Image (tube, rainbow, N blue to C red):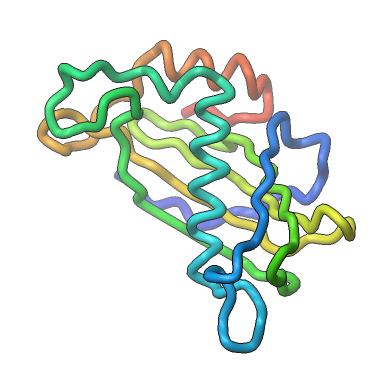
Length: 161
């Protein structure tokens, strides 16, 4: 598996075909009242899972798969990159814009742009790369049904390769 350096994340609404909202809970903030940096990993994961659910891809795996949770694609996070632009606070509603920007043989990369719903501003940008795993937890080719569904939704926006 080759490691791709983080790329520039688009901050243009038209580049994203899907978004979901997250309301900041008190437990996600730190002692100075802003969202703790580690909480953003959860927001990226919410964006990822809501995106896959929107496309019906959270139900690709049957209960017969060993070492997986039924109805979840068998993947592991291989890379995470976050850039913080502005603080978010308790009770803010954040919009997580999600797209698959790259799809390789066994890995795929999400780009996510997090904005403040009340104020049209960028809070954070992130990139999350997952590797498809087989039953032995080794990288495996992304199934064609998964690949074709994502590429059909993303159109020309997702690099394939």
